[in-house]
Image (cartoon, rainbow, N blue to C red):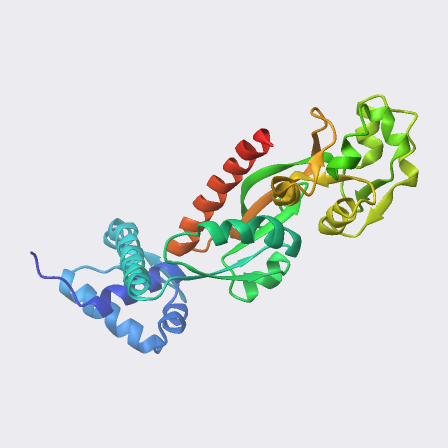
Length: 297
């Protein structure tokens, strides 16, 4: 192998070229501008050619410097990635994940209990994305019509709404028009409610204005399971209750697309840990399996 110039000299040159000045490179590397200049002059002496053309107080790469800088920058990126990989391999894998509390309780927790990404310790937060990322989260799951701007977003699943009721109540309801005999329950704040669902099925004789509205999806499900009425509920939150027999779809063709979907957000421009990458793949697989299972309910 050919002898290499000193690593500190290469690093000083790369930082100065990328940042545009010795002063900015010195701040990044926590040394003085004079030390950066000395390292660059050492490197220039070793290769026998100038690497910068001095223009006033600024720096411009010479032909020799421009020929090397892209490969050198990539080399330092690879060194950083290798260093991160070694730290991750030697540490106990941990991940902080944020999700709305209803989703975490009804959808995420049961799946983590059954099978979570191998060897990963997961901490769950219930915070907005900005707060969660400041607290160290690598992934934030959100329920929204569109993913928030400024993040990388992975679509997990589009939400489906369905009329759900206790089995004894559902048996008495044969058509959408029969809902005029039931108390309607819906979750406030969703894009789609009973008015949209009833209009799509021509059930104009049923008054959606009288619907009982709740502040969250789990409360709507709890009311329906207690026998209070028929909830137009999110399938993602209701799957466990349906599987346990507490609730059942009232109509075989009652599913209706919600205006919202579930997204997994990550910080733009940030390198994810191996655990975060594995968790994103796991979330996507679990979301796909959720709809396969829902079709069988």
